[in-house]
Image (cartoon, rainbow over all chains, first blue to last red):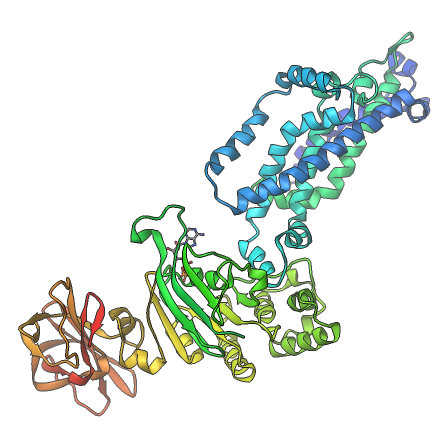
Length: 266
Length: 355
Ligand SMILES: Nc1ncnc2c1ncn2[C@@H]1O[C@H](COP(=O)(O)OP(=O)(O)OP(=O)(O)O)[C@@H](O)[C@H]1O
Ligand SMILES: [Mg+2]
């Protein structure tokens, strides 16, 4: 039995990595090879797919658009959530418990529910097909999430820290920026990570609220049936590249996330 | 430095307090003289922290005024009150080094860097923190962190008052004793006003010139340790201070005569409780109970030998009385008669002394 202990984890990892490996594998093949032969690694190794993405504006603009609204959304969500979470963690006010709960229920509705009202609203005020449109729409889901995560981290900081800072001569705003925010940096990292990930993978609202100027990469990918049929190699390369930012962000916040789990939030 | 007065201060944590129970502080009139070493003594939940937070401005009292040198500061924010406060649990700025933690209150007041260096070194030396000055504060033990909190409280020499809210709870007993004597020494040297909250009477009595005893949201007595011992104003003070605490025995008062279980008792109180008193008691410390052939009969139930003296516990009806007996006196075996020293026996009506 002992000798087979590695078996289960290995199978598990293979199972998880297989699709990703396959994507990577395909991205280095030509479309013909993908359609023509079955091989575990590229027979005709090519970087053409990637070259195309990095040189063709219709492709790389998709990435730029996605990253733009995702970053905007993350910044807005976290900066709005910080004061809100502080209020929930430090003050008791009428109905605070209920409000906290209702904030979270927003997340229970599928984004599709909000697609039509947002489309209507943004068209009316001229926000349609802007990065801001998608960023704001995603805030509807991300602000409550960020408030909830940050509230957990903030409540773990004793209120005596605030009080000591006032005693030591700091005003509230200086305390908040210079002491409190660094203290809960881990929480901010975790909140930002979840906002980033949600906004990065959310497709429905992002597609509905944009047409050309702010079209996200995922939308570009679903419209690649060219005259030559589906360009599978190109799609695989694009897919691989969409994993990169996520992996990058995870790498930076992995320790914070562990802390977040330890605190029981996340 | 300043004289601090509280005038008719009441505080409730509720938005709309109605009953007296809604108030964490019932009504406080107190005065803290400039340069005094005060201990604030009382059981858990009696409002000690609330009182400190009102003095430091972290809380604005529901009613009443706070005065520094007779100037009303009730609405002045904490930052402008120039107060140092050390809490029960360590508070450190995790992102800073130990040095920066200690220097923080000074730098915020625009003190010249040369003086900051000097003060921080001095305080760090006093608290044995020199070796860790360059380290990040977050890596220290509880003890170490609490020393930083203390140091940050002590580093300014221009504060109106330094308040310690049970600062040594998390510190091990040996270090506790040393830190307490350091604080006392510092008080002597700098002449700062200090208020020290504790619910440990030895800590209070060794630290303070004046002890303020709080009970259930009120200040029941302010006095020197000797005054509290000899003239407790309230049964709580008698019971809380002294070891063992004062004996408090129910009594009846008829036509001016005080009787305990039917036996007349002489007291030092010349007044008598009003007829509206719900509860009348006598209070007498164990030090002033003695064996007396003309006293009233009791049964001896327990003897504790503490070396120089013994604590004897006796019983009449269902009342227990403790008495301290010198080691050279003999103790009768089962039954005995005891009496109370009239000069040290007082009547208490509903808890408050009758003089
Ligand atoms: N933030 C708060 N909100 C509501 N009630 C509070 C709050 N802080 C304290 N209280 C209540 O006020 C009363 C006095 O509390 P306080 O903390 O002043 O007591 P304390 O004497 O410092 O006790 P301890 O020795 O346990 O520290 C307690 O009954 C407590 O439950
Ligand atoms: Mg307290």
